[in-house]
Amino acid sequence: MRDVSDDDICLEQRIAHRLSRGVRRLLWTQRYASITEFPLANGRRADIFGVTDACDIAIVEVKSSIVDFRTDLKWPEYRAFCDAFYFAVGEDFPRELIPDHCGLIVADAFAAAVIRLSPIEKLPTPRRKSLIHSFGQLAAARLHRLEDPMLGGV
Image 1 (spheres, rainbow, N blue to C red):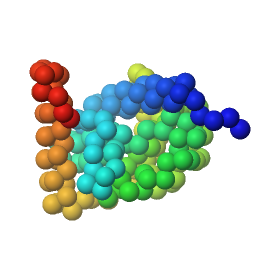
Image 2: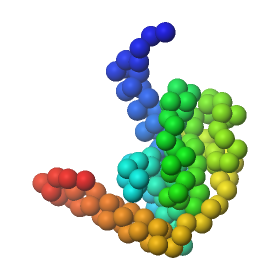
Image 3: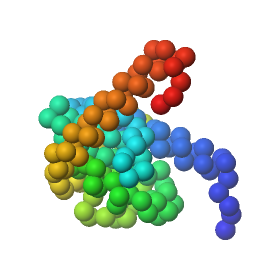
């Protein structure tokens, strides 16, 4: 068995970036505004965090490979921060690996499709309010940094 190289990591990151783009395009068509790498109160970071105008919240965990899926044991901790939780994978990913109690999205760099809907577990109102506030703050800070790179931070 060979060690994971920097080239492998870069490839995984490129695949994840492409899948994320396709997923975010899908979310946009479903009226979700989304951002990537959203920090949660438990110290984890959601790959994609989306909010609708009705304040529904979805988290999508992007898996670039079977190894990525099997070595990531933190994803159950995301469920407490969303109404719907999905895994997003590429077309060639073995779908039977994804737990039945999670939604499933198949994506590429240009589009995505929901293969299995996530069960809905409504968040408590105070947590929803806090998450949406954090979402707005983070999105605004990132936009501001794009407009004024001298700000630094976030």
